[in-house]
Amino acid sequence: MIKLRYFLFLLGLLLVQNAMTQLQSHYEDFNYSPFDRYVYKPGSEFHTSVRQYRMDQLNQVVNTDSVLYDGLKVPSGHLNFWKRIFHDDLFQLKKDDINIVVNPIFNFEGGQETVDGLTTYTNTRGLFIKGNIGKHFHFYTDFVENQAVVPNYIDQFARQTEVMPGQGQRKEYGTNGHDFSQVTGYISFNFAKYFNFQLGNGKHFWGDGHRSLLLSDVSYSYPYVKLTADFWKIKYTVIYNKMLQYDKAKDAVDYRYPGKYGVFQYLDWNIGKRASLGFFASVVYAEQDSTGYRGFDMHYLNPVAFLRPVEYSLGSPDNVTMGFNAKFIAAKWLTFYGQFVMGEFKADEVFSGSKWWANKQGYQVGLKTFDLFGIKNLDVQMEYNQVRPYTYSHYTTMYAYGHYQQPLAHLLGANFKEGYGVIRYRHRRLMFKAELMTAMYGEDFDDDVSWGKDVLKPNTQRPYDYGHVIGQGLRTNVYNADMNVSYLINPRNMFNVFAGMRLRELTNDQRTEETQHFYFGIRTSLKALYNNF
Image (cartoon, rainbow, N blue to C red; front, side):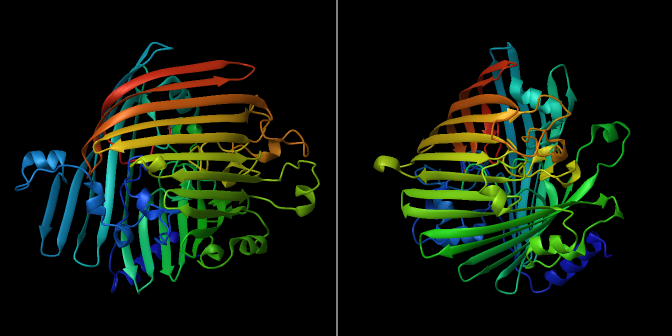
């Protein structure tokens, strides 16, 4: 069997010829990205559910430079040092057909967690570089290094999993701190008229909501190959990636972590000027199984083959997940959206009412508004998600729908119901944001029985076959409220000064956990971070 790296190398050589390049938007934090209100307008026919957006396609809908500086006063004159710091790219090289941009990424935050009397801080330093050299080579890369003392619930998650949420492996720093880092990047080519090739290391998000039940960016970055076709009203994407299962025991003796592969397909179809429907399928399988070293399975290489029949023809050894995403733009200020996901479907079991363990389904419904009540830049989003127990799981951890100790879809895994809402208001450089997450889920009592929340836990450890309901196990309720105000300094890298507070409470029959966290600092709000869990 041809090894994956050889295939990628040959494919890359073929695509370099006659290629033109495009960059993705690096504004990954959609709380601060200013482009959402323009792509969710009737008639834009923008494929909003495929993130990150491509800058060339955004510019077909709106002038992105004008949006970034809308309502802001920018000093005139030559590009001096202070203008670079407060209004533009820190460094830019333009010479002939070479264009390189460098900007910092940072988060210097301090705070107080009053319940435990803990002083918190975050010290993040990094940079991103993007550009092109000639007409055929386009690239993006970023790197961040972090040291942090975090609120109690994030600290607990990190020490239990040895992974920072969305950030990768941690190690001890000082008495209460964590040290962690992350790097992402890609090279991109357009070939022919409708096709794009991308080779990178990063994350992806498919959906119109704050959460995704299909594929989200809440886990660690991973190496991938992405092929995209844009034609007529269709945007079709297929991703081949390599994932790891973090193993603390192997880490202690310096072994390589076990690997697995994933193939993800998503077809988004714009129906008229207001609606879209997306179809999703994925398969996850171990790099090595009971038959020996498997590597990248060439049966899944065909980018247009339906994954479920292919997996079935192999003896159904792998973890297949399917679903769809829908959107309807009811007005220029209102959009409805939703998702449905399933891992198994047997009609007689689904409709029997017996609550079979393998009824692996979940759904999402939500809405987002822009300029609510005619008030410019007053935006509200509300969303509900629920997923049945054992969805995304498999009979072994290596086949689970997860990467580096975290789910690939919703950060709560499965066996939960969640409501989420956020209100944002921006006036020129000043922005106010308030968000609330409330959820109910079922935790596991011990390591020997799985009640269906932890997608990495083998579903063979279930206590019985029938009678499974959302919230089974240790029924837990949690709410997480966050309010902050920020002042934008540089729209190029979302450099802002901020202050806020977070209130969180978790309760079940065994414990009550409270968090009261006050924080302030300066940062570049480019990366999407999910601390509301």
